[in-house]
Structures are given as C-alpha cells and as structure tokens.
Image 1 (cartoon, one colour):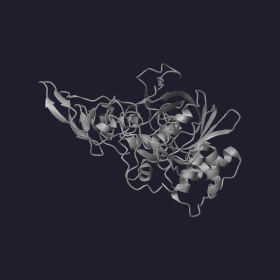
Image 2: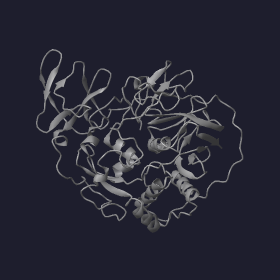
Image 3: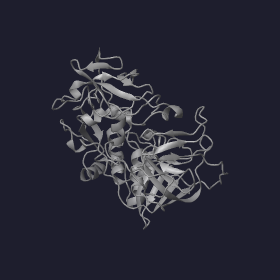
Image 4: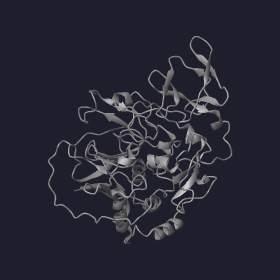
Length: 456
C-alpha cells in the first residue's frame, strides 16, 4: 500500500463525469447530466463547486474534487449507482472460479455480508469507535477525539544472544491448487490461528498457523487432506469462498484519494481512511487486495449491485486473554487464557536489528481503538526531513492502523498496520505489528494488566 496524497472521506472508485454551470462569484453551480453525478463523502449529490476547490485524480484515474488542502469534497460517480442499481448483476469478464467445487455457485450474491463488517473481526466503518486516551487508564471517554499513539525505537539496548531453537519442520503441499490452499487458510482463520492476509499461497504464515492449530487443539492437521478440511469448513460456516453483492454503502466509502508518504502531509489530513473499495473489502474479508482483484478479474467494484467472490472468514474470536507471548524468532503472537489454554495465534512483525523489541515481561496498560499517532522526531525514528511534533489523524491507513495496545515499557505497543500483506515478512520499529483485523480481535479480548512476554 504505497501511497502519496490521501485525504479525508469520499465517494468511491466509481467512474464518473459532471458538467458545471456558473452560479455566482463565490460558487459554481453543478447539475446532473445523463448518467453521471458528483457525490460527497456522506453520499449526497453535490450541486455546486466550492470556492478554492479544484480537480485531481485518484489512483484509478477517476476525477475527484478537492479543497486547497487536498481533502476530498466530492467524487464523480455513475448515477445508476445511486438511483437505484439494477436488481442483479453478473461479474464482468471471465470468472475462473465459477466451476470450482471449493467456491459458491450462488449467482445472486450472499446477503449475509450485505452489512459491512458483520462477519469479520474488522471494525465496521459505520460503527461508532471506542477511543481511549492514551495517557489515561483504560477505559476512558469513548467520544474523546484527542487520542494519539506515540512510538519510538528501542534505546539501542544490547541484545543477549540466545541458543537457537529448532525450527518447525517445513510443510510440503502435494500438487495443491490455489483454491485448495485458500481452503486451508480459511480453515485456520476460522479456528482462531490466523494465516495473515489470505492469498492462496503456502507461505511461512500458513505454516506457523498449522503448528499453532496443533498446539491449540492437540490434534495433528494434515494440510494435504483437502477433503477433511472441506468437511470441517462445511460444518463451520460453509464454503471458503462465497458470492457477495457490493452495496451502495461499500461504493460510497468514505475514501480518500491517496496516502502521502511524508508525515507532514499526513498530519494535514482529517482521516487516513481506505483509498478504494477493493482495499476496504480485502481488509473486511481478511484478504490480500491483489488476490481479491485476481479472484474477480474484470469486475467493476465501484458499482453497487456487482456480484463478486470473497473469502468466507470465521466469526470473531472471543474470550479473556490473561497472557500474551510475542515470539520474536517465529514472528508470531500467542494469546492464552487464565488456565494456560491457547485462545488464538497471529503472525506478527516484531522489531528489527536497528530497533529491536524489548526483552522480558511487560504488561498491557491501555487499549485504544482507531487511535491517532504522534510523531516526535526526538524520540521516534527519523521520517523524511520532519523535525517537529506531528499529530497524524486516525484511520486504517494510519501508522498504527485501527488499534493501539500500550505496553508498560514506554512508547511500545501492539498495534495494527496499513500493510496487512507484509505482516510476518517485514520488520517493525520495535513494536508488535499485526493485521488490523487480528489486532482488533486481540484487543477486544485484552484488558489492562495482561502480561506480554517477549521471547527470542
């Protein structure tokens, strides 16, 4: 998710156009012509051009009306997406999964997923977000808008060399198709041992999840026994991939055009929201965004009523976490209850050579959902040429994603990420980084006082 300029809210990645008619000296009147409209972030049709505004393009090439700060005012959209959509649509182009026995044959979409976020651990975008002050005991006023996470690298503490532990045996799949690997990933996701972003590839995150499943259940899992995996899926929620109908709310967002790299530019935005329908849906359904597009080659994600294929993930894991182990070697986080039973496991990015994570045991002090981020060059890593304290607004594309769990070692925490497909494959600035949906799920099972043990 490399981005440049991204502003606060907006319509969608829908293809649009609109014409203007002069109204007065301070504004220019617009009206709908034919099949196109101009849509504001709250879904209303804009009929004038605010003073000082201008046009830009989002990363899909669609025209966007922005103010002088780059904040999105409105986005061009097809009027058929708002007045109203046709009763049903077939996915455009070739669907290589239509005849696959591992995927749903439903041609009309699965209405179970019509409400965003209803079936995953991701926070629904239209839901109210509990946000606690990071400098106060949890919980605090959920309406407070001044919550900011602050992260700095470790103070270059010397690392103690630990004996190398034997690695888990490598798992070899025998001539498995991408759809069969997806079935395995969905099975693990539903079991509460996250494989990370589901992409149809047998990588390290999947291997770690297989062994975590065996630790959790005491049962041996044969990843090559696809028939047994599919039978388990049938009894725990159905096929691994199902049809989903894009709703007007999905298409409307709010979205921002782009995410700037420079933190000073980020600080000028009002939100670090999603940039597209595909990015938002991929996160909601625990998918790699590229895989979502591949699965729906030719589909127009910007039009309400379009039927697409999505992963059918598990219900949000529930329970009460009493102890967390952050395994730096495995790049994995394990959550246990008070009886020592493994509740869930997640792939993680934990520290780096330059900014290592702490060692030993700390505790969770505070939990904040949808936090902002405070960049302080005196205690944080150096970002570009920025030499002043910057308050970065919240959003799933913020530096700490959708969740911040502050640890008793100052400036360290467990948090989400704007780049879920890199979890377990890249390093962090000393903290524990999870996908947004995994971080959210874990945060809802954690309270202040929970111990977090870093092991090498």
